[in-house]
Image 1 (cartoon, rainbow, N blue to C red):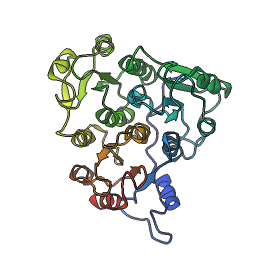
Image 2: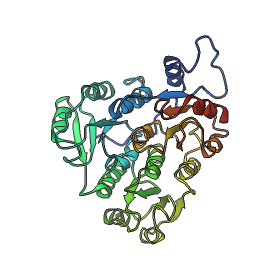
Image 3: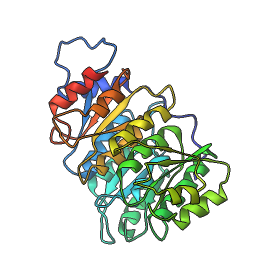
Image 4: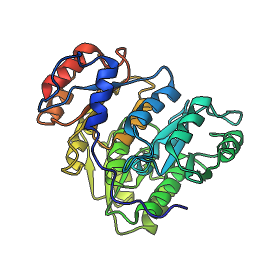
Length: 343
């Protein structure tokens, strides 16, 4: 097991932002980039695996250099959000990468290559979920690369989230706050995952109409936290809020409003922002992986060509790095330009 992580990775991503922006053609050659707000960067791939790798390679652009080496990696299945939904607490130390889900899955070559680029020998690779989610063949393949595999799993997704929270507490030490999101819907949880990654907070999951036993047990075992519920009573009912002995909610009238409300929960040194399509069925794929950027994640949509008023308002005054996750079929060029202008 690695020793606890040092203070959070240097938030010095502007240089790679410029490099990636030039590479994808968002900044015309010859145009001066000296401006108060850097140009937006688009990170995308063709499938869940390549989408996560795009985020990983941009975030850890100089793996092996000072302050940029991943300490570990989290592997999650690429076809369901259940187990990786609570991975956020571990993503300050390394990215989330996707592998084929199910007991017959095998380790994709590009994922193996990214692991070897990111990690020193004998580093930890955390697997979110049991063997039915991420196969033993994948575990064996990762071990054959020289890494130590730690499977974080429970009988169901809320127990897996509790196991991940335990590991995060071991790595970072106790936190002052714990987040709780609904287990069977992803929007509030993925926005919470970005907050959990940035501020190193445990992220637990619960059923919306009944307090999940694994979550109640974890909170009882760790009583000195402020318990913050993500989402309103339509997501997590008042009776659950009471059963969890929660302290407050972060919420808004829609998923986009709830994500925007989380911006105020980030530290004052976090000036960047991430935008993702928050209304597509598979929006969780890029949103989960994007937590490793360690900045607020805003949910745009459903119209890909329009920047919603919620996102416009949330971007006001945020003149740090701006990352758009997904291709133009998720966040269109007009929406991207509007996001740059909104700052």
